Length: 458
Image 1: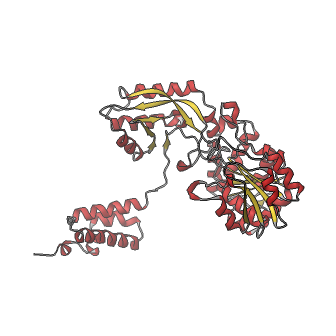
Image 2: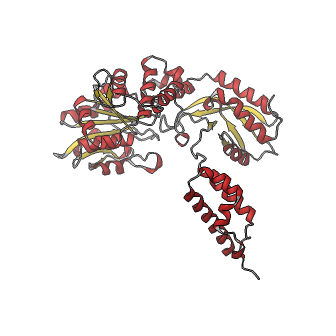
Image 3: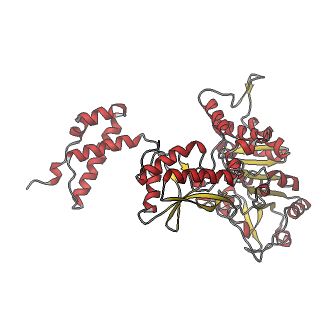
């Protein structure tokens, strides 16, 4: 009896197959060869595992699929129907149309990224956002790097290397992806000094920990969780006063990049950057892609002498923003300067969206879907490490029924084109119009009706 391994085609035979040859014409030859070898290796593994030997046609089809997948982008635009406004796993928040256009304009050609057009000589990339940040927050100086963790790493490396930085145990948070504040501090070369307990830290705890080797007090806003009950922490003003009395720096990380008063929308109070600076913090840190509503960035605001020191540090170059991010951040900041953030910045447009408008869209969705759909009350989450546990009233499209496998439905929506990400609760599929751009309504409904077996939309 012939060995099943002998039934497998050679690499040369696969490469000479007209379908593979035609499909692989646009690929580098060595890549096609490598994929063919991988395909045959999988076939041998199937035989070794006593599984069915794949046919020649199956091997060719799989190889062509591999080739197609190689150049199909894995990073794709999705429709966020979860109701989480700043959704870290879905890229935080969308950029404004103007910010996207600005990124495209500077990325499609050359730009004056580090060139002074009036003087005809080299300039700094920092100038494109610094003046806007200073105007908005009244900071003496500002600097933007590629994320907030990098901003903190840069400041500690430049200002506290080999020295102590005092922080409350209740603020030793873990941020997205498993990164922890103590680990970031350790990488900077600063020595972490923990004070107080998880739930209660007093001003006297900081005072007692100060030594001749102390460089700064660090305050980190617990933006991704909330501690309630038997808690205590000194006010920002008290920490500033203590730090300055002892000739130390006060570093404040409010995190979310908030420039607007969140209480006007029925939400809890989120620390604003300009308020932290007004309290007297020497440096203030934030993200650019949370409540600020811009691209991924880490923003540092504060004393001019300190910012100039940071700009000269080697980590500043390693963590610098590229031209696209700078263009998007500058444009986003411009929306605040022009007092149009609520209309132009998607994060704030979603936060300020009236419930009546959301309900109207949800009802139109339900009518288009049919008997399996209904409109229910719900809550939209701000998310993204901002305003923990805070939510906004909303209306949801709910799909359920004895004949509806909602888990399977949710998966099929995610695998569609475009992918639609919803949430499942209590055997019900829920979709929140608040986080779906109105321009995506038709695509979302087509996806739902197709998967549910409805007739095409008229």
